[in-house]
Image (cartoon, rainbow, N blue to C red):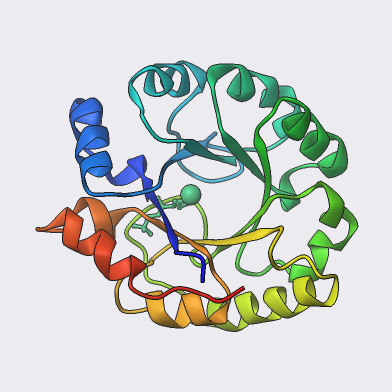
Length: 223
Ligand code: DX5
Ligand code: ZN
């Protein structure tokens, strides 16, 4: 049994009190901070940039799980590595240089991740299996927190897990899921194959944050 990781998305934190919320998340026993980077082009929203990642890195006791929702990630990827991303994920749909970029991330000593929008087939990851540490399945259309979970994502995670099993990579490549995650779907997601649950509004808006993390972590996957 490996215990489920919880990555809390700062997109749902209080942006005027980010450090306070970051500390509160750490005291609630999350595993990673999820940092959603949006460029107003790949998605219709604009958020954080490298200076913020750099600033977070200085105060965080936990790894920074940076999720790039930007077009042409090759243009700025290094800046996020330099700023201190511990895990750097970009979208398979956003570039043609997937392999190069994944290798660049690993060479820098970070975990390499590819993310898939809800309508993108899991087969898109096949050419990159040897360069991947993490696959992030989007269970909402990327762009905003607080959206409703898309139930088809559960089947998609199962399909991805079976595919990884076929290549004996289910222990090596971590399946993460992002969007509308809560105590309502944590069990199904974990059983389907997710080993990391990203949570924005469910965690940051919870009355009892510690309890919300415990609720997400109560199911673990045997790998
Ligand atoms: C959406 C972001 C998510 C979002 C999750 O584009 O990638 O990480 O912050 O927020 P919730 O959990 O509220 O859907
Ligand atoms: Zn995200």
